[in-house]
Image 1 (tube, rainbow, N blue to C red):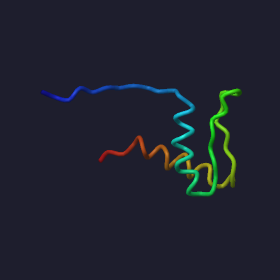
Image 2 (cartoon, helix red, strand yellow):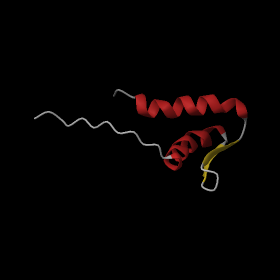
Image 3 (tube, rainbow, N blue to C red):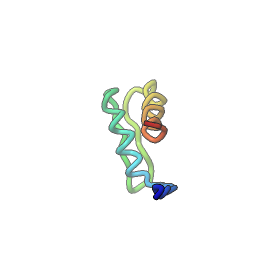
Image 4 (cartoon, rainbow, N blue to C red):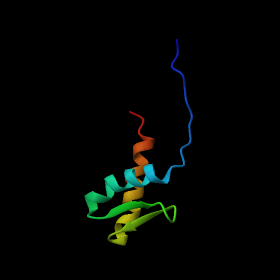
Length: 64
């Protein structure tokens, strides 16, 4: 029997902010979800933003 393939899209900003924050702390930055504004809030050195996003995306693109 072959494994069942599940394609699911999750648009949960709170979960995304936690994943981003797990990378951000390495750069002495923070990413938090603001429930009132339904927004992801970044605090820290702006030069790390791109790195944080790219490293977080790699969690989902890993083929191993």
